[in-house]
Image 1 (cartoon, rainbow, N blue to C red):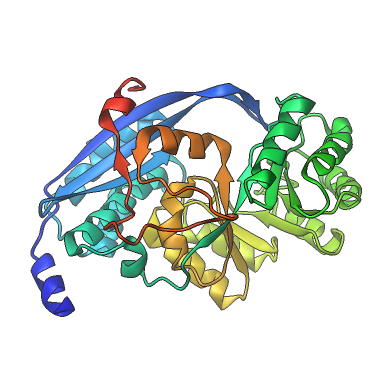
Image 2 (cartoon, one colour; image 1 turned 120 degrees about the horizontal axis):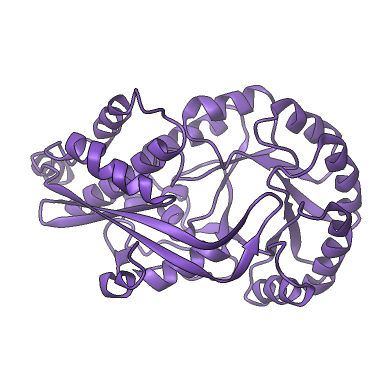
Length: 371
């Protein structure tokens, strides 16, 4: 019966792609160790075929949507909706002279996710089942704690996640290194002794700063140090990883746009936990390959931001550590999408009663933010 359905589905073509972009102001000014921002742009792709609609998106510049419309739509439209990896390969070939990292990979990611969602909806199965789920839920950590927050705002946000049952929380550091130890102490006081505390420098520190501060952060039982130095500095990451206090994982990888990037990071022994972002790395097709790299090296994988979009594919990632429940994206997804999973005891669970990833764009609500 399943084979018969798949055979009929293989005759379904991708009819068209629709693209839209929405710019959503932050709820307050935000910054990390190396960047400041007051809005986030979501680029949405909808694929149509076989009487179904698939949804994908990424967070990036308006140029991502322009690239989908000008280049990728013509590559994908008319292709077999069941052959998503073939469409992915065609998209990668089409942008050869444009450059794979950055905007191109983000555009491919949005289309790829929409194609996987379309396929699952045509077959009327949850995306996690189509991808081969190995778990029923995805552990999460609350992420925000921006350097622009006042001490009171920082404490309130982190403690709020712990009160909701999210027992891992992450804060930003690096903008004023001399203030970071006291901010981390304040965060520990706010969340209590049981919850795990993570820090993310976004590459703001020098190597020696990072080594010194790792020792200071360990006094507050920080167990995760993300991008202590630039993710381009693989030797520096390896140095911090080798010398960090016991029990402190070094993590990076969120800026990976293609498989060779992740392979180089693993070859360098740069991280204890590899991060990957389905909205940047080329979509679900490439994310699954990153997961295979981690499996081959017995290394853990952590999903970066876009929590609603990661839940189904990460249920199929055998080496999964956890997923970032990022404040900005969780807020935007709840505003613009139906079917967004809510945290439950520190996890997100896919809705297996809905086909695909179960997310639907609320067009009327989104239109007020049209970019």
